[in-house]
Image 1 (spheres, helix red, strand yellow):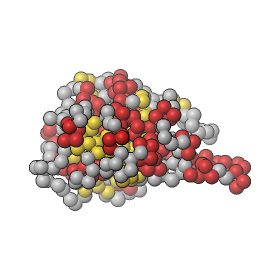
Image 2 (cartoon, rainbow, N blue to C red):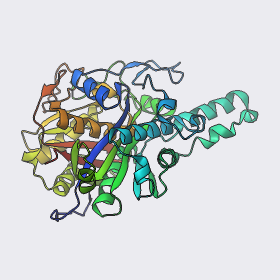
Image 3 (spheres, rainbow, N blue to C red):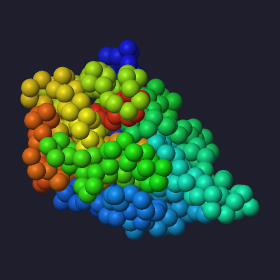
Image 4 (cartoon, helix red, strand yellow):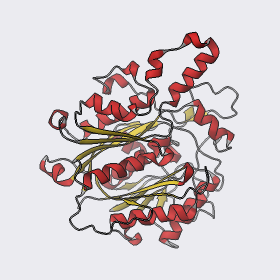
Length: 414
């Protein structure tokens, strides 16, 4: 993995890393099949927010996960002892392992990396704890609820649920690029020979704190998320989890695993430009690092999955950074947030899964809710309807507050 100021150009003999399983909890679908169908259809996850009280806000739309039954996926832990984001993380991990056809018993005593990115951790439960104490006083203290709060449980609970005795578990809190950071951590661990198997991705649950924060910034859209559109008005907060099984190629081939895609490279950078505003040169540098780490040139990239939040500044800055690297004719560039909303730490992980599915199934997901492209966002965002495409290399962007950028490059397995 390339980091700012360090570029790995020695690709010969490097261990190859492939995606052999995915677990998805999203506002538009649960599981790989439903998620792929939803992306192809351009399905919208927007609905009125029900998970917290929206009284006092002018807008109350969001992108919630519906139809999720934690007991279906969580077998060895007490669901009531897990926060909502941890439930998402553990369920998506179980789903990914099953999708990969892995026998957990066979890897239980093997070194495995578990890396989960998040923005809010268990802020949903913290919100509820604070609200309860305000309403009922200290005597309403709930020790069980307090035990659900530590964000480290997003990763450690995965290892506990699957009974992984030699796991190394990380929870990565680099905000909205955290999913890609987690994937990059798994890529490094497998390339280095530290592990042959990693469970990586991101998870977040919608909470009033984050909704209110974005609302005060004036970046919550009143109805729909319209990335790159001249009439875009902001994000819609979302939730969910995306976990990927990353596996060393030889290990995957020996067990006859299905391979969705190969993780070709990852670039990380932190420009520390501003607490919330993105920086064009920082994003462009991160893209360049990722492409170099992957050993590909810009003309080889078929599609970019943008961070694409639908805010005025983010979309223009990201577009200009893409054009700085790719020139006047960049690849098609789409935003899955037009469908999913912004699922925070899960966003780039869900997008990485979307990229892998798009490569496998041969299509480009659309940017929905699109009327007219902003002239300052001079890209083909594949408006409103998916298109069939022979995808070989796809770039997945993740950007976050504080200038934390993470870009992952995926390719068709050759």
